[in-house]
Image (tube, rainbow, N blue to C red; front, side):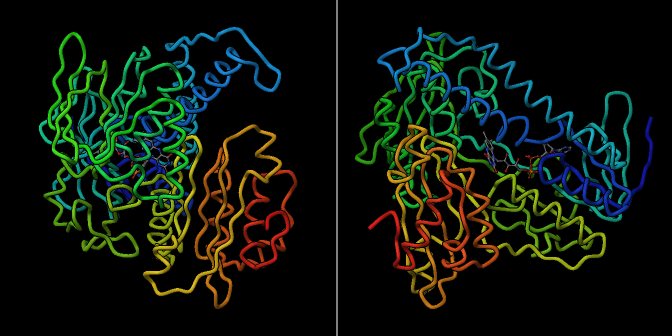
Amino acid sequence: MTNDISCKVLVVGGGPGGYVAALRAAQHGLDVVLVEAAELGGTCLNRGCIPSKALLNAAARFSEMLECAGAPVMGMRCEAPTLDMPELMLWKSGIVAKLNKGVESLLSARGVRVIRGWATFSNAKTCRVKMTDEEISITAENVVLATGSVAASLPGIDISGNILTSSEALELADVPPSLLVIGGGYIGLELSTVFSRIGSRVSIIEAAERILPQFSSNLSKPVMDWFEVQGVPIELQCRVEEISQSAEGCEVSVRAANGEVTVHKADKVLIAAGRRPNTDGWGLENMGLDFSGPFLAVNQQCETPMKGVWAIGDLVGEPMLAHKATAQGEMVADIIAGQRRKFDPIAIPSVCFTEPEIVSVGLSLADAESEGLEIVTGRFSFAANGRSLSMGKSPGFVEVLARKSDEVIVGVHAVGSHISELAGEFALAIEMQARLGDISATIHAHPTLGESFLEASLQGLGIPLHSV
Ligand SMILES: Cc1cc2nc3c(=O)[nH]c(=O)nc-3n(C[C@H](O)[C@H](O)[C@H](O)COP(=O)(O)OP(=O)(O)OC[C@H]3O[C@@H](n4cnc5c(N)ncnc54)[C@H](O)[C@@H]3O)c2cc1C
């Protein structure tokens, strides 16, 4: 049976871009249909941000208990802990399920019609959705494409069996005795952190000269050092040539920069070689839209060259991050409702949830120099921060960059345990075009990690208090 429906706004993809666009459009009183083939919440909630952070937190607790089972830590000693992996996975899935339910309830409360199925477009404003027992044809005045991204593979390598992407790694029922991670970006390193902490022998292969190339080297170095202390080898400038698998596990041929080929053996291989926009299999070729490299091309309003067809999130470019997708989704809904808006944030925070964590917002020193800006910097080390010391965590720092001419903050970069919680304050400072003096004059609660931002700003002003 085929049903035809029409609506003011059709959103395809229920990830953090799409479901937020649907919520906001409905809040504006528009008639909204959201089509999602899998679970609401998209990659982020089901196979990305949330399950990975849940496992990171559990793994950190487990490793703290392990530490106490060796020599006493802070005067505490405990029995050697054990890990029930299926129970851990159930706990993680419970968090995901709770949030799925939350998204579903919000959409329902705002009157969004949610259709479960795969959308295939026949032209820019019409798609068909196949469900179990019927097929629906949907025509919309406005179409918001939010189909997200999928894990990129390596040429000639089939993801199957013991060769995994992050999606399968986040669902493993057992801790693999050994895991070879291909890719030293944030996804590969976050999952390396999880599995090395819960008992896998992890090693990492990275093609570039260093891990986390999107962050400056003074931020990635403490993470590299942490893996070294954990005994996780990282081989840089190495390229995977071939992966074979048998009942005994996987064999991975890796070519080093000097041309030497070595064979690594591991029970499981995680391919974390980046992500690519999801542009296949849903009739994009019938919509008359343009590409910008692998991404769908959009203007500053996230509109494609086809009037009334919008695209957001991972589908339209870097940074492929949930909060960017959400901000674009909200904006597009506002524009469809008649508001004048464009997507021009001064900065989008990037966070890497390794140990220590990294936050980078705004211009790096190299960016500022290439823009010809004269910069003053201020830095404060967590070695002198009471909160950091009392948490017994690894060292790190907050560095603030400001224009010399007017002391307006253009970049904040930090590395340290739990520093991700300050990403919002850093982004707010940059977005509000705060000066160093605004931060140093803001009373920060004591003892908190946030005081380090204040202290770094004081240092930038040349009047440090708790540093020289
Ligand atoms: C392991 C991992 C960890 C991550 N951690 C973080 C993090 O800590 N912070 C962060 O900001 N980002 C993180 N990300 C990235 C983040 O998940 C993405 O940037 C974000 O999900 C993109 O949102 P989106 O709405 O563009 O697309 P997605 O979340 O990918 O959602 C797209 C949705 O569209 C649906 N869909 C696609 N095509 C169709 C179709 N034809 N019909 C119907 N439905 C369709 C899909 O089923 C999917 O649910 C992580 C990603 C991974 C893989």
